[in-house]
Structure formats: structure tokens, C-alpha cells
Image (cartoon, rainbow, N blue to C red; front, side):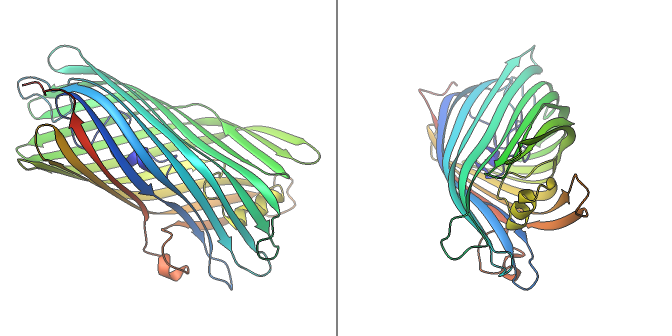
Length: 387
């Protein structure tokens, strides 16, 4: 599996049943370290930018066993496999909006708790039954300054976001080619609350995905797509009057991935590009000052995020026991957040949020800077690899 388990993005698509670099035969383990960012930016008239980011630093460990199919069938996916990986990270939140009339500053700490479980059982020489479970979760507590002076504390805010995926699929292999299809169940959750309001969303979505993988000589080509949708239950409370509203609102995820790999005698390289679209009736990651002020006034926020991700995975085998692995992920995108007053007092409006990196000072210097994920680690065999 790729960088998705050590990405700061909780709701983006993941390789629940797929992979980039195939595992070696036999029992093995992996470990690694990662730095990642998720950043959101909104231009503010007269001041430059309202920007917010979350930055986790992961430690990852994993264990697994794999056996490749016989007779050259398939394109690298094992016929038999089990794998378990966990990635834990402390995270740091920062948000700054410096407009003198509507200043909002927030800072906080949190944690990521991610894990993935993958199993493949051979059904005859050319087929495998596949099961994948993937969960990514982030929670944080922020201290927020709403229009006050330097280092003035206005309120405390609790944020959490999680996405759990279950995939059950079937894979068939030919010489140098394989195809797979799977049923998907996805459960996104979001929570955003302070002393004035509480927004809580949860529910199960249904869909599927399909994958084609081809291998010819040293080359591998991958095409993968997924579509998942349904409704989430939204509970909104406004204090101190305990006004509770419960709605059923639509949510969806869709993604398409194209990947190309090349293998040398001692090294492997895999490059992929993915278009990712997420529609959610809440905002609970890297909340902007504009959104915080709107939620304080009782407005509802829905998000449509469209991003392009590019991932690079490189593995160099020193010998049959240990291999170095490096990963790099970059992402650019645009997000539309709709703000709606259910009472009809305020007109509906949209804010166009840029998904960009956190390096550099102002808005103009960050237009081309991507969200980032860096990974370095090692794969190693446990005991003698099977011949």
C-alpha cells in the first residue's frame, strides 16, 4: 500500500485493496517515519490570507506474509497475503487570519491513529478473495482567539475527523494481467464544537471500486477507480439554548488513479497520479477563521473538495533481507465551502478555499506550493525468504 496511511488527509482515497510496490515473498516487516501537511487557504480582502494547517509526524510499523501466484500469472499482486500496519502521530494545528476587523487565530495539538489490515486468499490458481480494512482518524483541541489582542484566549474548540473503509473483492489473473472489483462500505465521521455550537456527522456510505494491473518486462501499469455515496446523519446544537437539529445530508467520495512502475535488478520505482473528490456536509480539519465565525453565528458549512495527488514510491534492495523505501506525495486542489443560514436571515454564500502548502509567508508565495507527505523506512524479511 502507498502513502495514504501516513497522509495528513483523513478523507482522501486510500489503497484499501491495492498496492504500489508488491511485497516480497514470505514473512516480513516494515517500519518508517513520515512528515505530512494538510493546508487550506482563503484570500481575505485587504490583508492577504486566512490560512490553516494540520501537521502530523508519523511512526509506522507493519507485519505481513505473502506468496506470489505460480506460472507468471498476474501483475505483481500476491495470490496469498496478510498484512497489518499501524501509523501513529502527534499533530499540530495552526490557523491565522490577521484582518483587523475580523481577526481569528487558533493553535492546538492532536493525534492521528491510523491502521490498515489486508488479506488475500487464493481460490484456485488464478483467483483470490480479498478483504481490506482501513481507518484513518485525527482529533485535536485548539485554543482560539476571536478578535482579541495578542495571546488572548477566547474559547476552546474540539475537532475530530475519521474515515473507516471496508472492502470485499475478487481478483482474477492472466499472464501479465489482473483485474479486480470490490464492494465498499465507508464510514466518515466529523465533529466540531466549542462553547457556542456543536456539529456532529456520522453514517455509512456504500459503493465499489475496480482495478486493472498490467505487467510487461520491467514495466507495470495500474488503473484504479472508486465511487462511494449515501447520506450522513447531522446533529447541530447551538448553546446556551440547546437548539438541536438533526438532518440526513448527502456525502460522497470518488477517485481515479493511474500508476506506472519500473523494476531494475535491485530497485523498484512507482509513480502515480490520482484525482480525488470529496463531498461532505461539514468541516472539521484545518478549520479557517472565516468558517469559525460563520459556525459561531449558527451557519451550516458543506464542503466540495477536488484535488490531484502525485505519489512516488522507491525501494532499493540491499540484499534478500532488507530494503530501503522512500515515498513522496504532493497534492494541489480547490475546495468550495457553502455557508447557509437555516433561518434564512443571512444570504447563502460560498468561499473558494485553496488547498496549498504551508511554506512561505503570504498568499501569493504559496499558490504553487503543494500539500506534502514524506516517508522513509525499511522493508525486511523475517527468517529465510522462501525459494
